[in-house]
Image 1 (cartoon, rainbow over the protein chains, first blue to last red):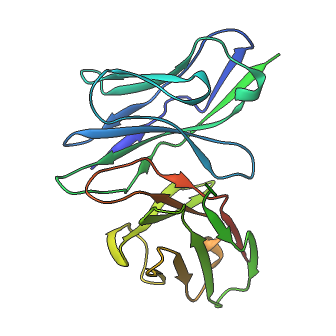
Image 2 (cartoon, chains in turn orange, blue):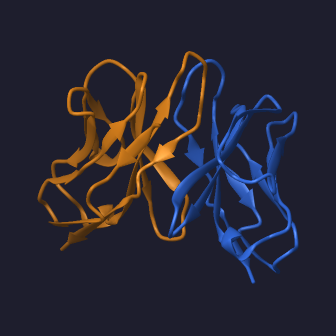
Image 3 (spheres, rainbow over the protein chains, first blue to last red):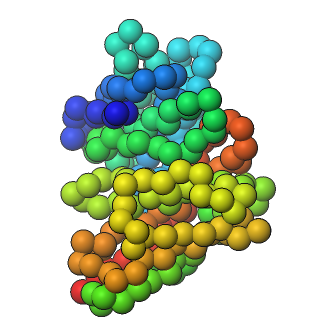
Length: 116
Length: 114
């Protein structure tokens, strides 16, 4: 069965420092990986995706993620954190079995707290 | 382009009642998916509709149903509400078709069952 793990419930980082939010996945087949962010009382906002190609994916708001097939990981990174980046971050996977699917399996979320 | 809209934003219902939630996707998007978000279970996939047909379904009881109209708008219905159905229900739209695309989420409908 497909699954996504976000091992950290919360990540604390000082403003201006680099940040990493970890994600590992378990799927059979080729994974399609996504990162979403959720602000309080809001829906999810798409940040970036990995479908195929370069292992380093760049997304919105200066975020990037690195796909590592051997470690089955897709960690979210940003070189310099902002206080406004404080939010709940979700990693998700979608598995394509040869047909289209938009069924996303989400991790449990990681709360990012950026201190000024 | 306007984003995904969901109505109503908030709902309070009594156990045993039924409820219908509505979702209007981004213009041109043909796939609509529904998710339930709760503190205990996190984000869980309910179902996906594409071209008025259910294409995927999650592990929810038959009390949860949905449909999609020819203009891609979608509704989900929950019958015989239970206290555990209290959740944020999120709708997401994407281009659909033969590839997997990123999904864009609406603000959600907060359902409270008393």
